Structures are given as structure tokens and as C-alpha cells.
Length: 91
Image (cartoon, rainbow, N blue to C red; front, side, top):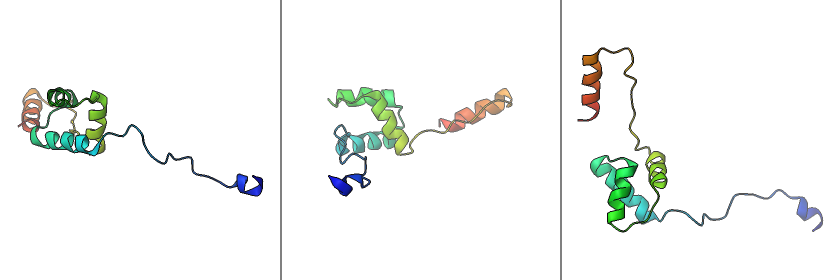
């Protein structure tokens, strides 16, 4: 090898063998936009469509697409204020 063997080489993989197919990813994003379901419920619906995917993978896709809900802290609020905020978030 000589001096050429001392050159820096990238350790990054050239491809990702187990990458989720794009059509499944797009379907998850589409379903999430339609009805705001959690990963578990999306998995159940996809299973009915004969799509075999792990719940955790669905969660990762939702998170990477920034489709996660933001929860607020209800500490320090009165019961009526907390109830109003929760109703606002889910309506």
C-alpha cells in the first residue's frame, strides 16, 4: 500500500441496507397529517393495509419529520386553566 494506505478515508456507509421504503414513509406522513394518530395507532392501521413495519420505526419517522406534538406543562395552573389548555390542544 505504501503512502496511499495512510490517507484518510470516510467511514460513512455508502448505502443503508435496511432503509424504510419511500412509499411507506410517505404513507406514514400522509396518515399522520390526515388524523394526527400516534405511532401505535398508525402501526395498527398500516398492519390492516398489509404493511409490515415496527412501531418504533413509525415513531422515528414522525419525529424526524417534526410531526410530534408539543406538550405543555400544566404545573402551577388552576384546574380550570389546565382543563382549558388541554381542551384547546385536542380540539
